Length: 590
Image 1 (cartoon, rainbow, N blue to C red):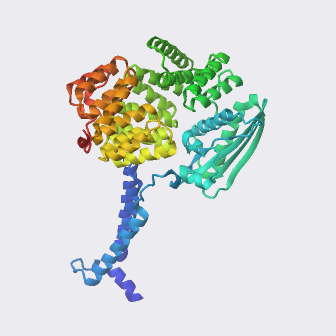
Image 2 (image 1 turned 90 degrees about the vertical axis):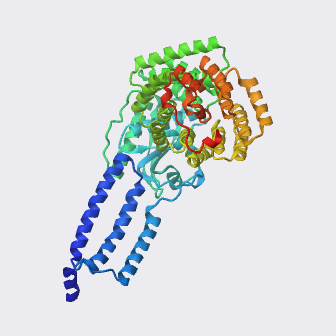
Image 3 (image 1 turned 120 degrees about the vertical axis):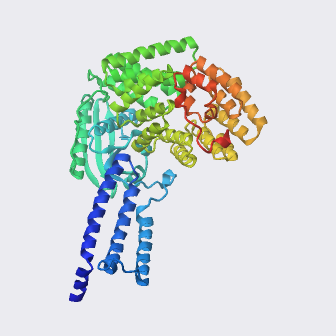
C-alpha cells in the first residue's frame, strides 16, 4: 500500500485530479450562465456534465501512465481502458443526457412535473339546480389570475387546466399531462345568496392532500373569499416550496370585480365570459347581452366595457351578415366602448387588447403591435393575449420574434388549441414542416372540432410533398368554408384540376363577396398571379381581415418579389422589406 501511495505522489495523480475537477466545475458554471442568457436547451449542459464525469476517469488513467513521464507512449492496455471508458460515457450520455422524442399524442403525454408550478382545475358546480357553472368557472379563473400575481411560481393557463373539467384522471396523471407539481381543485354550492366553497391543494407526485378548507359565506362576500382562498393557497405553497411571495394578492385593476362592488354586475360579467367561451353565434350574442347588463348595473365597470368590445368584434368578424352600414355602426360603438374602458382604467390589459384588435382591423399594424405588447406586459400570464401579440409580430414579418412569443404562450397553456395552432402555422412558414405537423396534430387532439386546424395541416402536407394526404386531411376540416378552401387547394396541388375548379367556382359563388383574400391565395397556389393580385386588390378595398395575413400566407410567399406584392403590402401599411422569404423546401410546392 505504501508503494501504491508513493506511485500516486510520483505520478501526480492527485494534482491532475484536483486540477481537472476545478477546471470542469468552472466550465460548467460558465456554460450554465451563458446557456441561461441565450436560452440554450438544458440538454447541452447535461451532455457536458456527463462528458466531464467520463473525462475525470480518463484523466486518472492518463495521470497514472503519464503523470511522471509526459513523453511515454500509450500502451495497448491504456488504449483498451480508454476505449472502454469512452464507450461507457457514450451509453450514459445517450441514456441520461439526451432527450427522448416527445410524443404528439395527448393521452400519452408524460411531461416532467415542475415542482414550482400549479394548475387550478375547474371547480365543480354542486348547486341544487346545477345551473351555476358560469359562477364556478369564474371563481376558478379569478383564482388563476390571483395566483399568477404572486410571482413566485408558474400558474398553468385556463385552457389547459379546464381540459380536465369533469375528468376522472387522478392527480398524478393530470400533473404529468400538464407538467405541474400542484393542483388546486374545488367545488361551489350556490343557493340563493349563500355560498359553500370547498378547496384542496394536492401534490401531483403522490396525490397527497397538502391542505384543504371550506368556506361558508354570503354571496356579497364573494370578493373577500376569493382573496382569502388565493392567499391561503399561496401561503401553503410558500411553506411547501420554501419560496417567498414577490407580489401582493389584493385586488388590482382588471381582476374581475366591479369598482362599486356590485355582485350582480360581477355575476353578469361571469355569465358573459361563460357564453363567449362557448364560441358560437347564439352564445356570443348572449355574451354581449350580459356584458351590457353588467355595464348598466355599474357604468364604471371597465372590464365589462372591454369584454363587450372584444365580444362585439368577434361576433361582427365571425358570425354577422350585416350590411356595410350596420357594420360601420357596430365598429363605431366598439370604438366608443374601448375608449371608455381605457378612460376608466388606463392600465387594463383587456382594454389594450381590444384596442389592438381595432387597430389591426384598421390596418394600423405598427400601432396594433404596440398595443398588443402593452396588453402582454400588463397580463404576463395570459396565454391568449401573448399568442395574439406573437401573431401580430408575425403579421409584420418578424417571424423569429413571433415564434419565441408563441412558444411562451404554449409554455403557459400547453393544451391550448389556439396556441398549438399558431405554433404550427409559424413552424410551417419557417420550413420546419415535421414540427409544424406535430403541433397541428396535437391541436386536433386537444380540440378535434375546431375550425381551420385541418386546413392548415393540409397546407403543411402539401409542403411535405404528400398531396394525397393533404386531400384526406382537407376532407376532415370541420368548417364548411375552410373545408372547401382546403380541398380546392389540395386537389389542385394533386393535379385533379377538374374537381379543384368545381370547388373554387363554388367558393367564389358563395363567398367571393366577403372572402376575396382566401380566393386570391388559391389562385396564387395555382400559379396564376394575375388573378391572385386581382382578388387581393378586392380584399384590400373592403378591408378583408385576411389582408392581415399577407406576410403569414405561405401560398403568397412565392410572389414576394413581384412588384404587385410590394404595392399591396404598402397599401396595407406593411413594409415589403419585412416580407418573409420562401423557406427552402417550399419552392417545389410553388
